[in-house]
Image 1 (cartoon, rainbow, N blue to C red):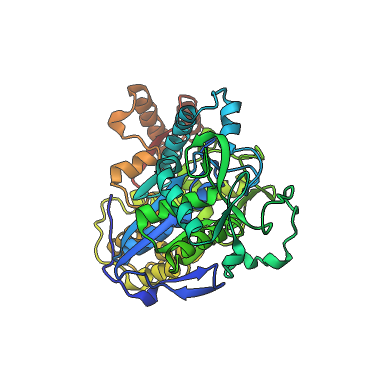
Image 2 (cartoon, helix red, strand yellow):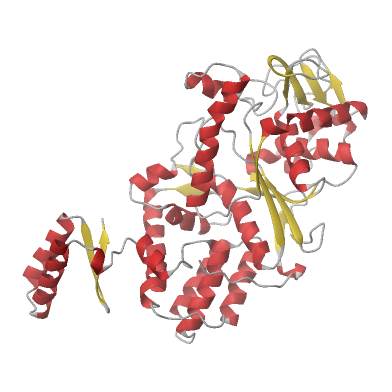
Length: 481
């Protein structure tokens, strides 16, 4: 794969919308030239669906943008393989145990690890097929229980937590900053608004750091398991350090999960935990949120079975800004498929044999400015299309600039030409069956003789045998159906 990266680390070139300040801010990392990103990963009781992928498109676009500007990047994506209760707070059934019962697993700690592993591997495959760079660290929550217990012990020692008959809770009254994300007004929260009142909690918004249970790990407070929120703090600390440049996640996480992370981390260290909080909007289908629990989550493999590629879905997502809602439909995906195919054909056929030269300064600036403006992917795509159509730009400059753009967008536009043609399904003549080659030759003869009915009949015959034929300026191109 080609790649063209800038060596610039000009801070002013990147602005990100910070959910904490509710405004776009110039990006400045904690350490010069280095960026750390933590992205809340899936709870691995099932395969991820196409809506989940939007949450991992966001850190991928960030990673690509920072790499393009010459930064060293470390990205952590975690896997929650225990402790995520069904109401996302401190009550309800553990989602992992619910999934284990569904699939007939015994309820043991060893079985829970075994149950989670195929879903972790499934995530990694989908993430790669979707065009995302791999994370620097993939972390399983169950591998960091010792670190989680130590954090809870520290919070207890510092007076930020208290023990009850069912667990250990963080006392939000001790952290006045609680609720900075999502404008959470803890004074207006009503006990029992979402779950049955726990009379031992000092405030209804106090959240669990440890839940006592017959199954789990041993601790000072008895057998049990860490709370969902402390998992991410421990894994971020262990892999990225006590301060993180950018933390991402779905917009639903900011109200409880991310506010809890801030409280825990900053009370342990006395320092700012995360500089920039970025949250993506959800994907809906028929205006309802895609969710595993709702049973309406399409998977990438289901799109593939319907004739769509992961990159075509990625292109569809890139047409909307990550903070804007996106309502999925197959009609919209068809349009995205057509547009991306046109781009890919332009690169691998219209520019066939062209060597990349220098970047087009105008279009490289337009594309990088768009991405540096809080990841404005719709504007970046618009600039890319303008580049393709601009006859003032030489073919070599176009190809070089498209390759550079693809390092930011990952749309399959910077592959080796043979790989690009194979991706489009085109088959070289020496790889075609003799029968198909003969039919193509017959059709060409019919076309030269302007025998259009015979040419159409032969095209239909080729299609019936599993191949699609496209007439181009360089001759017929054949792909498998």
